[in-house]
Image (tube, rainbow, N blue to C red; front, top):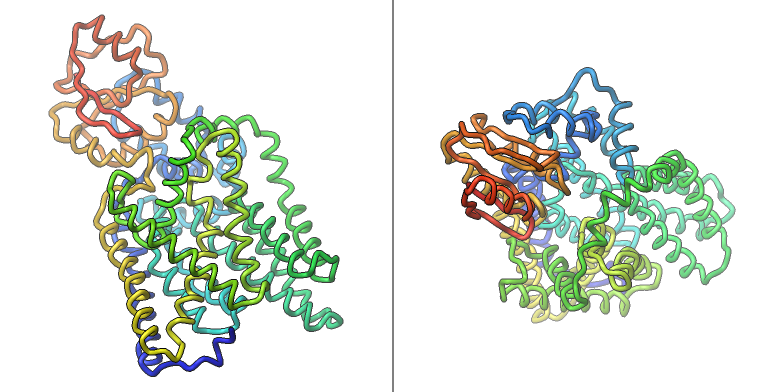
Length: 533
C-alpha cells in the first residue's frame, strides 16, 4: 500500500505533528528527569568498577576481610582514580566481563572523566545516546516504507516508550547499542536499494556498504548480541534476493566479513576468557521455569513496551494488558504482511524472530531464562514498534471517518499508556529492571533508621556487587562487616542493631547455635533477605 496516495483527513493533518511534537518533548523530559532516583543497581555498579579499572581481586580482597569498614571504604572503588588508565578498563573487561565489548565503556569513561562521578552524570551518557535513536528510527522507517508519516509515528512510539526510557536511564550499553542496531539496518536497506537500482554505478552504492560495515563493527564492539542482528540481516538479504548470489548478497557478505575481521581482537579476548564468561552468565542457565511460566513472562515483557507501571504476574489486570498487547502486535504484523512487500516486512520479521529463537530454543531444550531478558531482544522490540507505527498511520489516513475515530482513540491510548507509565516510573526509587537490587530502597530505610547499625554480608554469588549497590543508599554512620570466610565467626558486641544480608542457611543456624541469638527476617523478596539479630 502506497501511503503517499492515501487521503489524509484534515483532522489528522492538523493534530498529528503537534501530538508527536508533544510526545517527543515528554520523551526527552522523562529521559533526564530524576536520573538518580532509582537504585544504582548491581550491573550499574560493575559499569562504574569497569570505568575505574578495578579487577575483581583489586576491590574484593581489601573489602571482604571480616574487618569493620564504613560506606566510604566501598565508595572509594566506585570513584575515578587518576592512577587508573584506559588500559585498566580494557583489562578489566577482558578478564572479568569478556561478554561486554569495550566501546560503551571507553566512551563512558571519557564522559565521566570530563563531567564527574555522580549517578546523574554516568546515567546521562545513556540518556544522551538514547536521543540519537530519534533520527535513527525515522531513517529506518523511511527506508522501509518510503513515507515520512510512518517515520514520525515510529519516532513518537520510541520517544515515549516505557521500555526505552527505562534503559535510557541506566548506566549500561543498551541505549548506545540501540542506536547502532537501527543505523546498521538503515544503512543496509539504503545500500541494497542503491545496488539494485544502479548495479554499474559503483561510486554510488559502495559508500553505503562501507557505512554498513562500519556501523556493524561499532554494534559488535557494543554488544555481542549483534551477532543475532547480523544473522537476521543476512537471512533477509538472501530471501529478498531469491537465495541467489546477487551483487547485494555478495557485498553484504563482504561487509559482514570486514566487520568480523575488525572485531577479531575482541573475539580472541572472548575465547581466551570463555570460562569466566560461562561463570558470570551461569545464572541464565541455572534458573529453570516450566514452559507455561516462560510463556507468561514473554507476554509480560511484551506488554511492558507499551504499558509498564511495574505490575508483575501476581496482578490479574496485567493479563488484560498482555492480551491487548498481543492482539495489537499480531494484527500489526498481519497488516504489514498484507500491505507491504517482502522488502519491508521481511526485515521486520527477521529482526523479531531471529534473536528470540536463538534465546528461546536453548531455554526450551536445556532450561534457563535467556529469553526473559528483554534487553537482549532490543532488535525485536524496535521491529515491533515499526510494525505498529505502520498500522496506525495506515488506519489514520484512510477515507472512512468512523475507522479514523476508532484508530485515533487506539493511538491516543497507546501514547497515553507510555506517558502514564513514564510519569509513574519517574517517581519510583526502584523498578523491575533493577532485578536483584530492586529491594534495596526498602532495605536501606530499615538499616538507616536504626541506631548504631552493623550490616554483615559475604562474597558469595552476586552479593559483592549488591553490597556496592546498597552503599549508595546507606548513611555514612552505617558500618559493614564483609566476610569471605564464615567459619568461626563471632558477633561483635559494640553495635546496637546488627543486620545480615542474605546469609546462607548454614551461617544463620551456626549463629543461632553458638550465640543463642534469635534472628528475625525483616525484609525479603525473590532475590534477597534482610535478617536482624
